[in-house]
Length: 322
Image (cartoon, rainbow, N blue to C red):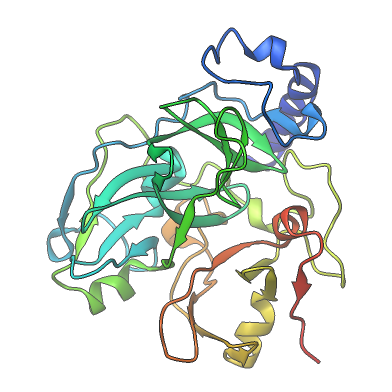
């Protein structure tokens, strides 16, 4: 599997660089305005393999009560969203691994729950913008190994890690990030027995398996040719990003949590890595991170790979302690 990932990455890198040209893309992206963009070099954008919508986003998710779900193992990660007085919702990574984006509405707020496996980046966005409410799909493109989303209304391209349109009519528009976190299914279920969990989509996919087996133990990321993180931090080490600061997860875990720069980061074991074993539930324990402010309120954050933080926040601050 690891050798296959390497071969596919190499082939995709060569193909992507050869076709990094809007004139080549226009036959598929007929609505996209390539004259508007923030891209310095089109070779920054690579073909990840699947075409537009080859990874199908979810537009009408179904839910069931947490107490009625029996297919998900307690250690499996889920993306948790809590908005207003609505019942908390869990979006299992076993589904997001294969769909990457779920368009939903919670308490009247249209949201996009996103997960980029190659960056381990899981972020929930408000889909409302000054240009109207958008619906998102997976473009099949990557930049700095991070998913490039697209909106179906204008077919502008959006960088998932930063929530900003980078190509198209909406270039420069930013999505609002919403507080949310990744935790184990067992943790969500224990806290929210009457909560809701996204039901299994009606697609033929190997839900519960990890198509990127061994990925987060690699020495280098796939489809990435940018600079590596400083301070001797491994490119595929997880970091807790809050704004333009990054706390290495190894530090947070070793210290049993950190409280600095107005941020309280806690860690609790019990959550399996989604990018380790062939079966997600059997992945090594990477634990659950919660991030709160001084008043105990949930804060927007992301637990992503170090290389991705360095790529999108090259001047960001590394909270390495000491």
